[in-house]
Length: 291
Image (cartoon, rainbow, N blue to C red; front, side, top):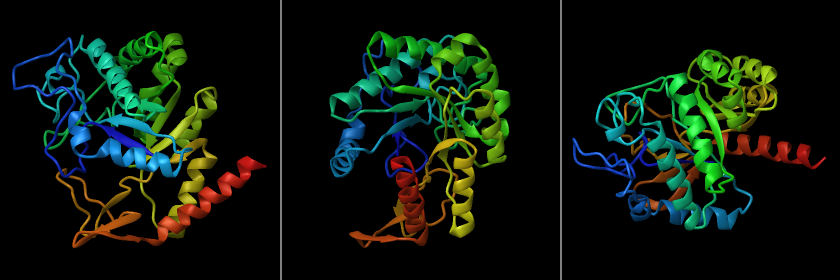
């Protein structure tokens, strides 16, 4: 499952990050770093409960934006990563992984930026070129190795259509290929075979479908197509909202989620048919691994 490093576009709280500062201020030493907002929102507590129910659950984490003071917009929303800020962002990610680890929550992997080719002033986003991501990847790998973190680093985390143009230059670089533990993909544009092509070219780097939701039996066939094209995962986004598909302060709509909480009674939870269909796929995949 995916957790967010800081806020995403589906949240009940104002946008926040782990080193928020007033406009114009910077904190290159990360002296104000804290995940207390996550703690106040009970995110680690709920995550720990999930892990207690299923100790085999693996978590990967994605940031929707680097700290605003590392970006051209000066804000979590929109803009691009400023040149020369890769080192502080790499250190920031390492500190986030460590902070969760101290709470008993192992982060198996992180992606370096959710949808790096998209920037929108209306919600947390951060544009990042492949050249910047390569520099960030190398610096994050140094940070993780220096602090004995076994958290994997997955590159890209965006649409099939841009997979080769963004990821392949990173994987062609010997340092980048050695530092990347995998590639992450979304299906909002393009076809799964574009992920499969990259996997066939660089089979030593596993691929993961980290964001999309499918519907009906045709959707489940699409999930099987992801697996046929090499993906080791299917991450339905978003997993859980209320019956009005809220909270949603961002710009993107959501269809009914697999798990739906009823606002009049938060203890009342319903499951749509795709929840059970996905369970069938998971069960079959588990049996296949066992044999």
